[in-house]
Length: 198
Image (cartoon, rainbow, N blue to C red; front, side, top):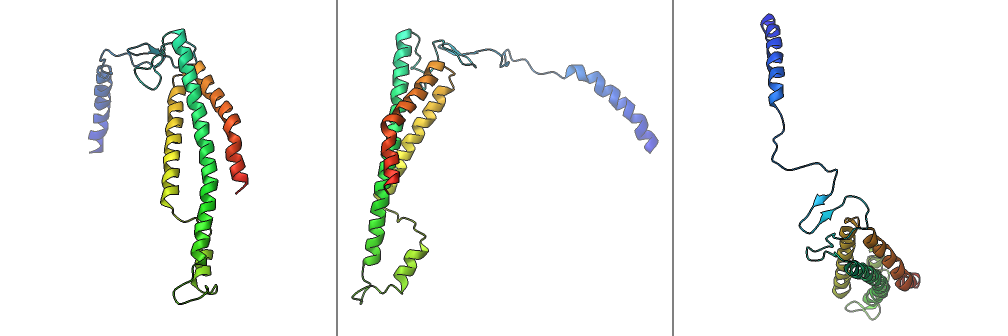
């Protein structure tokens, strides 16, 4: 039996080698190489840093093709970066405000007398309850809903910046970086001041 299998192996190997030239990729007429630019309806997407015009910025209708359109796009991207830093500063100031309000709400809840008591007995449940919370702020719908909305807007702007950077257009990238730097210079002190004075 093993003699039969060993005599069959060279025959199978010969058949496999003879069929090998027939195995090739199907050509559907598309060039799948990633070496050059990608052709788009409005221009080309260059896979390297460049200053050429004609890149799609976030929307198919936003394709700056003239010098003035490029300047306007750079100003718009710069202003978006300023808005993102302003939202970050507002969020920092509001976090400090919400933290103080949550502390007040928690202290008010601890100072309420229980039913039948004239003053709270701190050796019973309220003090134990406050210590076991490990200083977790209470859920306040208006605070947490506002926090979520601000975070969602900030995340959406950051994703938009990522998509703009992915165009590899150097003037857009510089506009984002300079806008974030100027925005942090203008608004960063508010967030850091609020964090220090909690």
